[in-house]
Amino acid sequence: MIRANLLPASRATWRVFGVALDRERARTCVSACTAIAAVAAATFGLETLAFARLHGEAQRALDAVDAHAPLRLRAARIALDVARYQEFEREMRVMRRSGPGVAADIVRIGNAVPAAVRLDALAVTQDRIELNGTAQSLETMGDALAALDRALPGTAATLVRLERRGDASPLLHFAARVGRP
Figure 1 (cartoon, rainbow, N blue to C red):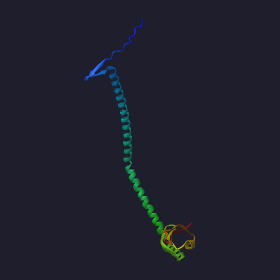
Figure 2: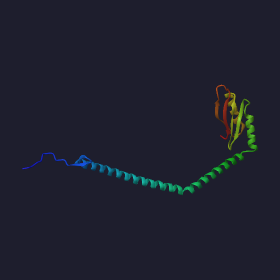
Figure 3: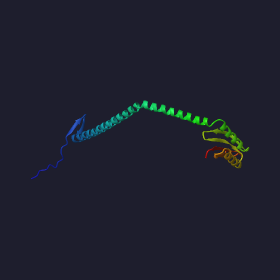
């Protein structure tokens, strides 16, 4: 014969500060809180380890950057020297292309420009002469480009920019170059 107790088990209770607590429920709550605290502590520990590792890597990178500071300073000084030498070289090229030959080229260009074209600026660079000015009409501008094309042997005139500024002004503003094609 098998005996079975079909009556509900008696619940043991604890009294804490005048409150009756079921032992089984209290044990379950304490176990759950302990498990949550253990997971939180493990997560915090892993995050702390990851942070420490990344902090160490960042510190090593900063130390490497600091260790190369003299090299960076030397490279910056060399770059400044190179820039200064390049500027000297540009100035020397311009100076080599100055004197009576350039003056004669400027005179030829000035004589070639029609009277209806006005030059506002003229700049001589190492391999070309750049012009800015105004023309009264498109036809006059075409004549000026053709004349500039013939002004210096072995060179070609190129129109860089042509615009009309404002509706009231009849003048065409231009930028052109005369140089080797």
